[in-house]
Length: 577
Image (cartoon, rainbow, N blue to C red; front, side, top):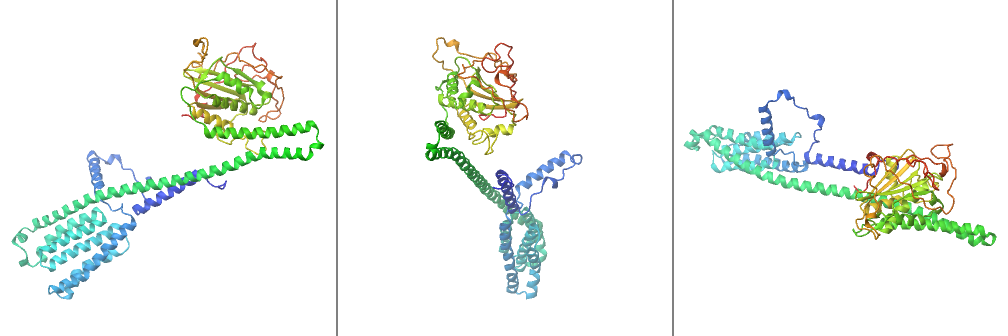
């Protein structure tokens, strides 16, 4: 897909709209009028009676057929049939006139109205005009047959046959034409038919006879309208099912294209992420094989360390991919102790030298409903991500407490401000803030995606904010109701003031700081978002919300500040709904 073209979803939407518009034109024979074509009625010119009559006429209009629901192809086929029927009547009329001892000119004159109407029906024009011309031509043929047969009773059935034929148009105008024509034609029969051929009742009650014939046509038209209604409902259902099938097909095609795109991107990304560590391992091993005799022990150790680091990176990538693919929920009996898992995860981090930059504020016990392995992955990935993307020597704060029936875990670290779109994108697979090939970190962008997947399948919530040079990640997990084996169950830790201060911030206790195995890092490096400004080491850090607390017991003697606020509108990421 070209980078300059519209995105896939936009292309699929445009294709779907074009197909729907084409299908609408095919069904109606003309495009629908837009909102601009509909002139609003003047409310001052409408009365209550007018509105009632308008609603009544609208109700009647919805009951009678209009012919526009026929597709153009179907209407043309039916109109072609009626034109052929009308054309066959013309020589039959001339022959029938000769059979009843009329001359040829009399037969041609009797058929001339139908001939003219046939020409009008054959010319291009509006549907309704052509349908009325063909219908009137057939009705004229009925009058001619009755006239030539001197009012022969069976010839009146020709009207019923004609009405059945013109019903193919499914238009109320041809029904109205048939009813009015039959009424007027039967009134005129007393002047067209030989007086001796008419009965006394027909001569003296011509109006009643015309009304009776018109009533028959009305009854026939009503029966055909009922038949049309059921037939139209069936066609509407068929069209609706066809439309749903078409939309389903389009949706399936869109999903297949999207899946193919994701598969292509995944293969490209995975191959790149696998190729880099494998190339490092292979290069280091080849170097050792060819130049080992010319290398010192320190150089050999460096090469082995590089190969080991590449293998660990590959192992982490495989582990994260497997975790994301196989993440499943748990039952209500699975309970893990959050503080215990946190200390275990900190001890197993790959950046062991940076663990000293982590300050922990946890109660003694805090049970959560999450498997130990999943909780270990969540904590390890969050802390590792915070350590890697923080400024050198900056403290990372890990806080946890219980709020109602939930356990809240928060990880804070100084870092560049991120917009909401970037935050949401960071939790997608193989996505990093810096996606270039020359990025300083060696991650594959799977850590936060694994965190999201694990939190989602365990029914938790995940939020991330970035403001004022501080990145905050909050994980809400279900608290465990089953007490852990303790001497006194009433000693289960809680944060009683957390709900009250949740809208403002979290009052933090004195942090528990693990005893460092080596001095804290105090590396100065300019901030990438503020050139020329160096970040102070951890002992001098004074971050918003930390109140000067840092490493090695920093901040224990002075007053403590509140944590930064967590307003609801700054928490865009909530995957669990």
